[in-house]
Image (cartoon, rainbow, N blue to C red; front, side, top):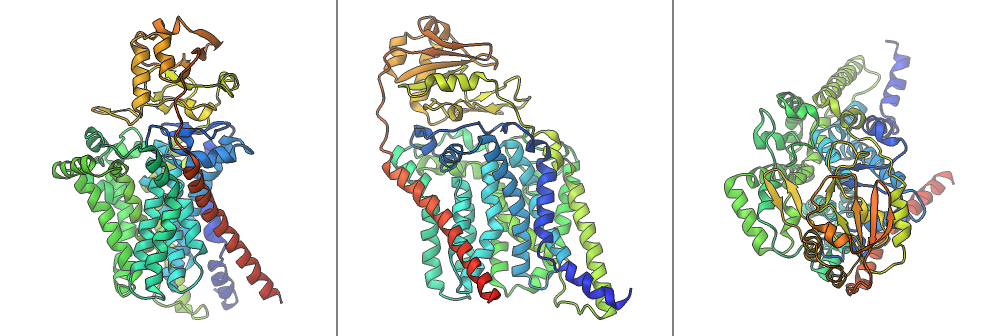
Length: 587
């Protein structure tokens, strides 16, 4: 090759735009069919044209504040934008920023990493069983917290170098869209900032928990106000939500391969056969090639800290799935308020992703940058490119059905016009909404074969009572919605409309096209007036409901505003700083 081509090739390989473009391509390939018109409705994921600021959205209803501040944020955005577009945009951004963030993190921690190594890091972060399983389970907002992890490492490194805190504030607030995301990012931030070295360690270990507390304020304050989720956790839930062994792997092997979600139905087809072993072997092989290069950098406390976090994030869920581990978990649930947040233990495996991405990049990173004018250096560059291409291909082959909506499982749905008609009917009225058939999950003709969360709580402008009870393999896990359970039992028993009204119910919505238990509810419904009816939905009006007193919302609203200020204020400070730097360069 002529020497005059070598510098342009190396210049291209250092292009700052290649990692974000590559990561965007991966995100589009994964979400392809979902990006058309319609709404995400798959298991726990529910997007609707419009959401509302109900007590449930603020986290002060009976149930635990699990979707806080997510639901309030969506309610605010859907005042201007269509809710389906909002959720799909956030999910696309999450996957895109995951890959891009992994590349930026690798570049910061491994300064000699060439572009091919950065692309391997992006692939490991995006194309893995954790992402696939959480997509199929409908945990789109958890993937926002997952996306924040590599960026949190980068932001914490900046703080260690005595630079601005604004990026860390944005990362923690973005991850704080859900309680789990807040805890994931806070863990990474606290570990990186507490490690020795860097500037102002004392300020770091005080400032980071403060930012994390503001990022978590919506669900912390909502839990304190409502008391939801602080009672004893149903002991059956720990076994039901424990990490699961995949074919040929065992629980530990499944978790090490970033898989093992509790729900065996929410997995790609390739993870249900012995191919799961092959796919995990390919992923771990790519990561293993970088272990030795990382060991050579063991003096870097950040690498050591992230490695320890990853080991704990894999070992702890594996232990929690054993008999003794489950016994400890049950005891924890009976004694520690809010311990139910830890119940789905496999989700904490996300903490292993940063070191996995770094190891994958380190496998193809020279200790020193090659000189582009030396022929031997160019040969080394070509070997690195070839090895990286093989690694990326191996990672894609390891999970081929992550592509195109995880095997075309993620397709947008169209809601019948009945939902909007019911929403208009109950707008501005009094009383809560009870829903039949019993239970929280539905199988509509338009929603596909997988069970989906009832969209009514996000579709209607009133509070919809939900028991929180979950039907899982092996039995039922009790929920926290005590009043919702009382109302549901009264309807199934066919109690009089006066009993239903005394419980604060102003409306009963029957979803006609989904199977489920109706009990003797026809005795109650026959005494009520029909406000709306078609083949999809029937809405009954309950006369003179006795209104229940809402919990005070001022503190919760203030916490939501503090969270929004942390996110938007941090972004504003960062943008102004960037503008200032550009103006300085121009002058």
